[in-house]
Every structure is written in C-alpha cells, then in structure tokens.
Image (cartoon, rainbow, N blue to C red; front, side):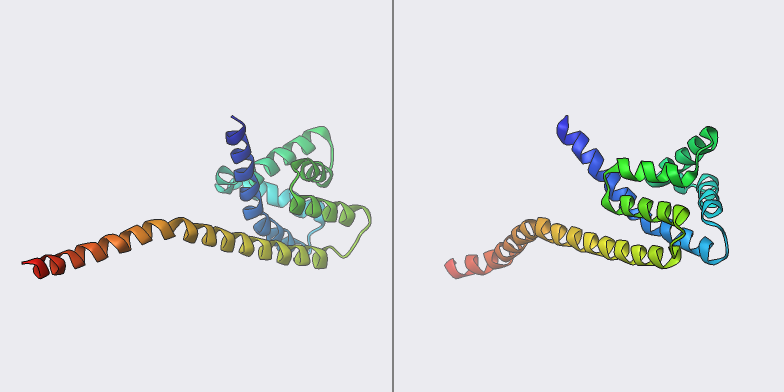
Length: 165
C-alpha cells in the first residue's frame, strides 16, 4: 500500500515537472504580448479547459480547479496558485508560485525571472531524461548479455559438432 502511494506521488510529481515548462512558456508568451499577470493566468486556465491538455496532465487539471475555486471564493488566482504550489511539496512549483506572488505584490521584473526559471526547469527536465536513459540502459544490459551468449552458442554449436565427427 505504501509503495503504491509513493509511486503514485512520484508519477504525479514527474507529470507536474513535465508540464511546468510549457505552463511557464505560455505565461511568458502572454506577458510579453502585453497582458497583465492575472489576466494571463486566467487565459491559461480557460485555454486548458478548452483543450484536451487537461485530460492528460495533472497540473492542468489542478490549475483549472484552482481557477474555479478562486473565482467562486473571490480570491486571486495567483494567491490560489501560491497556496497550491506551497502545499505540493515540489520545489520548482513552489519557486514559481513565489515568483508569481512577488510579481503581483511587489511588481518585480517578472518576465526575466520567469524566463530564468523556465531555463532551470528545462535543464532539470533534460537531466531527468538522461537519468531515465541511464536507468533503461542498465536494465537492458542483462537481457542483451544473455542474447549475446545464446547467439554465440547457436553459431558455435555446429562448428563444435563438426570437430567431433
């Protein structure tokens, strides 16, 4: 039971980390086109709802739920996202939530901070992919070794039989 729950948490964490760079890039695109932060975040939620992206990704589902919860409670989507990010226990998501909250409250240079965070997350995503590749290589080395030994035996057996005849 614990293993399944831990595995489920890890899968959701991986999915959130996978979809986080595209979320940041969408946000950057909208902010660079002249939208205000709150309006850009609302637009992303509406676009997630219109597309099938929310069916496959946990972040999109949660973000749509956050949008409607914030809308129904009269709260800001940015505050709701910050609370969600801090409760998620995902370091990258927490940093993004903090950056967005600082952008709303303090008025920091949001586009440069977001682009820097996007680069960091893409690097982490690349490192994670390389780690998966290495893991797959190590898992495949034993079956490939057995296959090589069997091929050697199959090809060497007729020659050995000829030597004894």
